[in-house]
Length: 592
Image 1 (cartoon, rainbow, N blue to C red):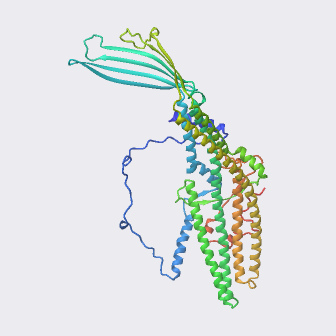
Image 2 (cartoon, one colour):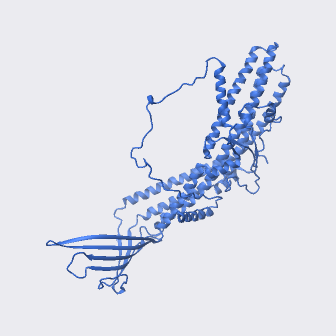
């Protein structure tokens, strides 16, 4: 396996250098062979599927219906789930930054490992094909026994033949074979004295096609195997870029959910204070019970939405851990990342030209179309007559010697040569195969044109997405500022503002904050999608973005207070920190 891995590393290194990859696949240790454990060869493996009467179902007692006991019990259970998701109180909490997530994804992510293995398997197929085209050695030994009866007397003999041969496929069709044949025969029961005889011979044979199967068509398997490794290298690099964007997108969506939790916590704190104020005004006779109940209803809705957001974060985090091959039961706390990637100065025409020139998957489609063209030429070759040249030379040992050993006698050389012509009287299958190749060529042309159009469409769309995300972000930030001023004004004039207006302002502020965070996340992702769609995204061997000349990428980590998010221990200072006056929280991405 060590020798095989060295050859694999050489092939992978050559293909990676040829396609200018930033990082090649890693060769994992070959491991051990599976043991012959019990059940491995069973034809009928056991199934664990108990009957209904063998199972039990226990009803959960949530408390007395119509009381606060059910709500409090559920609130406690949901809070415990949230505490576990936030890693509150756990001893072995794993803290993950954006850089950590990207590195873990390329080190142990299942999707990444599968992509590496696919690249390696393609290289192994090439090594197999190369070996078929190199000199191959074989040794065949046969031992035979024979008996011939003559009026009740049997002459028994033992015959041993050992053939050492070397074969070589010729570059443009045919093959060459050299054989050393050693033959030993002994009469086990005979009246003659010379019971044992031994001879050997050197044989050279060659078969060369001159029409059908001759030329480059004979090298088709080798050509395709070499090209497949180049395709695999491009596919692997293209996967690394898409995988980077996908992991970064999942991370940003998680951080966006964290920001949404913060926004809902701020709203919940404000609503709790507002309900207390409305209750006090009601007791003073300045508000009706309807106003108080309306405020309480919004408070209940806010608590329900907060629980839903916590559950959404828990589910997103568990899925993210699975993508990074982290055990689901492992407590994880993310570190928010403020990433600054300059928005590109580009046009739709420039983005389209870049995509058509640099997209690796498009290059693969173009080259596979060339494979289809070559397939038609190969199919046409199969319609030609079979015209072949064959010949051989045999140099044996001296037949007069009882033991020829390995001393050959050139004077006893024999040779033969022949030209064989087979007229194409039946080529119906080959003509059908040619028609099939023509259909596949036309399909490949359509697929290439469609894929090219989709590449152009995607490049144009990615340019517009950046502008749209920035436009939405600017409007959302302005909306946050407006709603914050509205809320502050209504807080100062609490007596003059009716309950419905105040509650609508709280909702509008929450929605504007969520829209701002959504637009910010969309802008970050839009820039990465743009770079990936035009073939200019570069991912380093460490799994992080490799900046292009003129691109300055800044990633700053911002700790998250998970205790405030999940333990319901948020203070007024936390509220002030999560809700700055200017509404620029979490900003810093996409601005030059």
